Amino acid sequence: MTTFRTHTPLRRMLLHAIAPAALGSVLTLAASQAALAAPAGKHGTHPTAAAKHWTHPTAARYRISAPYGVRGHWRAGHHTGVDLAVRAGTRIRSVGSGTVVLARRSGAYGKAVTIRMNDGRYVLFGHLSRITVRPGQKVHARTRLGYSGATGRATGPHLHFEVRTSRRYGSDINPLTYLARHGIRLTSGPFRR
Ligand SMILES: [Zn+2]
Image 1 (tube, rainbow, N blue to C red):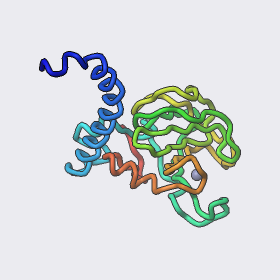
Image 2 (image 1 turned 90 degrees about the vertical axis):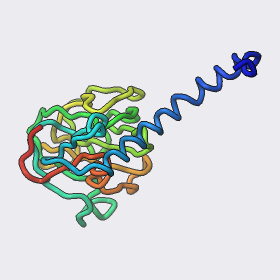
Image 3 (image 1 turned 30 degrees about the vertical axis):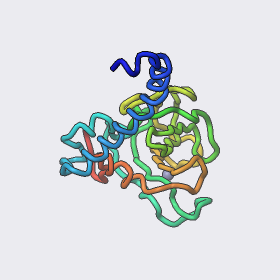
Image 4 (image 1 turned 45 degrees about the horizontal axis):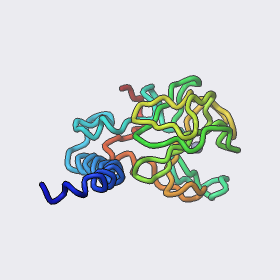
């Protein structure tokens, strides 16, 4: 394409600026479309490519000890996440790709990690005993974030898993629906993967 020859440096610059963002959206879109198109597998696993980009917050057995949205003595008036009862010291991992925006003690959440996902949602992991990531770090599905515990307001070891539309407390959405859209099903029964 001789017409572009004189504009090559500018064109290259533009491509560099646009390509990563555009590619990110395309991949995210492809993953969610695959998740919607294919039937969900047994035990929460998914037989399509989407499962490679998304995963459960833990590979260990867990049960749901407190569902999302139940009314109670939380500041928002309801439980803003889902509680997964796991043994203390269980490896906790990212459910997909994003960037760490918080990794420290955070009030009732105890030691907490928040990931800004590439789709713009915020995923929060609470009550950890230890954090192994730093703010600004890029993570992917299965990247270790830390280990479960009972820090903050917790009566026993469990993972509080929360999804928000913004960083603001109270902007929570149903975390099970969010993961299900990406082909990942949190099930209440004993689970192994
Ligand atoms: Zn909780």
